Amino acid sequence: MHTWGFEALGTAWQVDTAAPLGDAPRERVRERVEQYDRDWSRFRTDGPVAELARTGRAALADEAGDLLDVYTTLHRLTGGAMNPLVGASLERLGYDPAYTLQPSGDPVPAPSWDAVTWAPPVLDVPPATVLDVGAAGKGQLVDLVTDLLLADGVDVLTVDGSGDLRHVAGEPLRVALEHPDDSSLAVGVLELDPGLALCASAANRRAWGDGLHHVLDARTGLPTDEVVATWVVAERALVADALATALFLAPADRLAEAFDFSALVITADGRAAVHGDLTGELFS
Image 1 (tube, rainbow, N blue to C red):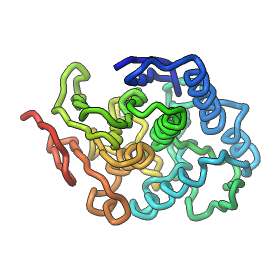
Image 2 (cartoon, one colour; image 1 turned 60 degrees about the vertical axis):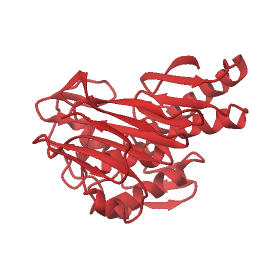
Image 3 (tube, one colour; image 1 turned 30 degrees about the vertical axis):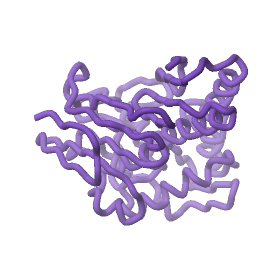
Image 4 (cartoon, helix red, strand yellow; image 1 turned 90 degrees about the vertical axis):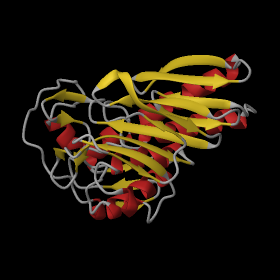
C-alpha cells in the first residue's frame, strides 16, 4: 500500500491506496477539504456558520441534507441531548475560535433543534446561535474524500481522518483501540472488514480542564461524565462518527431503533459494553 498524509480540520489525515495517487486526485482532495472547512467550521469568519451566527440565516452546502438528517434523528433518539446548536456553550467553556481554553461564562442549554427551519439550502435558527457539527462533520468529510477517490477510479483505499476511517476493498484492517486514559496503550484490537467505517470518540481527545471536554449534553450545555470512550462500526463514516458521540448520551439499543451499527462503549467506572458484532479482541 502507498501512503499519502496531509492536514485537514486541524489534524493529521492519511490515505492508503494500492497504487500511488497522482497530483490531480491529490489536488481535488485538498480542494474538497478546504471547501468543507470553509462551509462548516465555526472557527472561521468567512463561511455560512459565521453568517448563521450573525444573522440567523444561511445557505448551506450540498451535503447539508445528509448531515442534518442524521442530527435530526439523533436529537430525537437522545431526547434532545444531541444537538448541533451547542456551539455557544463550547465557546463559553473555552473551546472558542481563539482556543483560549479558559471558561468565560456558565454553559447554556442549546436552542431546541425543533425550533430551526430547514428549507434547503437555507437554515434559519434563533439569533446568535453557534452551529457546531464536530460530532459528525469529520466522518462526513471522510465519506466525501472516499467517494471522490472512488470516482477517480481508486478502488482499493483506506481514508483515515485521525482515527475516523473508512476502509474500501483489500484485506480486513486491524485497528488498535486507544486506551482512554493512556494513549500509549490499547484496550483491544478490532478487525474492520472492507466496505465499513470505524469512528471513535473519547472525552480525553479534546479536554482542556477538570471535567471540561467537547461532548456536551445540549439540554444543559454541560460536558457528559458517564462514558469515556466509544468506537462505532457502520457503513458510512458520517453515521459512525455521529453515533460515537450519541453513545455518550443514549444507550446503544435506543440508537439501534434507527441505525445499523456495532459498537464498543467504555464507561467512567471502567466497564466495557459491546453492541452488535465486532470482530477482534478486547484486552482484560
